[in-house]
Length: 134
Image (cartoon, rainbow, N blue to C red; front, side):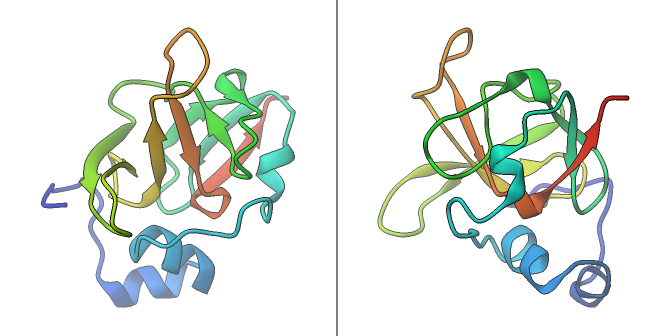
């Protein structure tokens, strides 16, 4: 990823602000275990934000049960909330999704989601912070 982001911090600054798991997933492109995060089962209305910088990423009304074990959404909250790049790791080609504001690795998007978009934004729960609607 060679993009320039609005928020840019050193490795040490990110490590000081994030939990070790958040750092591994969002800054080192890791993946949490499936069915391990509470957001996978979250059903309340609200907004999911980037756990690194707070940018709004996904509205709860776009979340659905994909059966994948990770929180899944059929669309980002806006077209400029997330960015995409090619991920050639693990002997495959996938589309990585990152926060457009700070570059945090969020997960991947696949073309097997529900209508209206047909997309499955499969996100790591530790990359998100949920703000319930009051």
